[in-house]
Length: 297
Image 1 (spheres, helix red, strand yellow):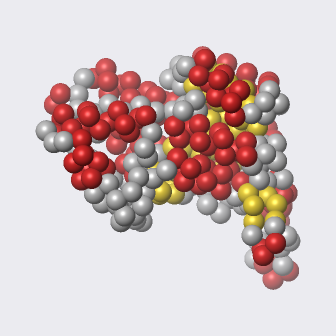
Image 2: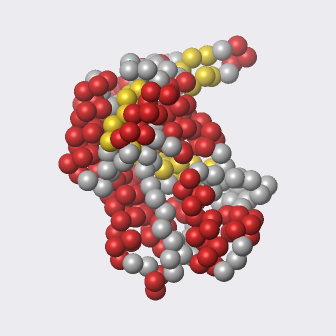
């Protein structure tokens, strides 16, 4: 793929060379099949995925390995991280490490360990998260700080640790796990909504800061995905709202979707692969909503 002469007339030299650098990197990330269908490939790219021992993170790690990527599965539970790596890949393609994303020293050590294992870090998927629900007047400050530390501090710390490798190689992809609640709000979720809105701001800032290093940033914004985190919320919200668990699912979680269906972890994994392997920086700074029509931009 090359720039046509007509397009070159409208691009300064630095812009042309930067685009060519991005396309050369992309060349390692895709393959084509008949009928013009493009198959996204990672071809050895190294991804650090936090919170990847289960749920969405696990599905993303699995999909990246299927696309010939190499994956570092980071999780608070070291044993589960190691087990997930063993199940999903081999020692040449997947490793599991313990990481408390709210602890700066542990994040820095974990990222360096990951880079030592595979030579660099090409892709960060900042996915680790928890959910705590309370009405604001009953929300313990300690719980507020805990949730923001994992979601927002964790995104900041892992970004800071990973970009030193990405900047050095002049290529990288920062992928943050946001939520429909990066754009919407719901009762009982003041901390979660605040954190997810904050992640949008971080990603947009990194899209601008990272541009000169050919590092892009995006946010994936799922609706309700049937994971252990969401399963835990169902009885909690039923208790807080004084309704049945069935009503929580039908009215609270899926009430605004177009088809009353949960988003699947595989849906999120496909979007994560697309963003990791996308051929240019055209989408940088954007959030991708995956919610069965719950929220539409």
